[in-house]
Image (cartoon, rainbow, N blue to C red):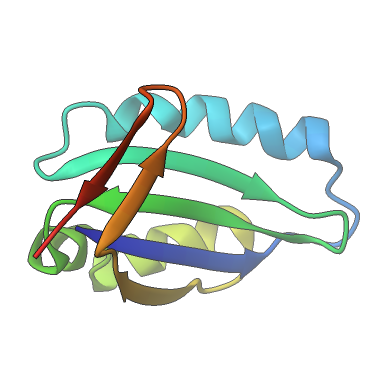
Length: 103
């Protein structure tokens, strides 16, 4: 499993409710994406926003986070996103009551 953390600066003064409205608009686009297990939208009062994505493979993540996607994000939010990838060898899932390990 791969976790991708995406961060970008929001336009100055964009409040949480406005960012949440934009997130809700885009959320349906991520349903059914090959390899995407889960996405969390993130927001901070300092004007940083983004997403935490859990992917089956890095290749699937990179297929989404291409130049076209980066340009769309920059146009929508006013800043190009930063993307960091992390291997995820162990996941603790308290909702399911289990711990998963990945080779």
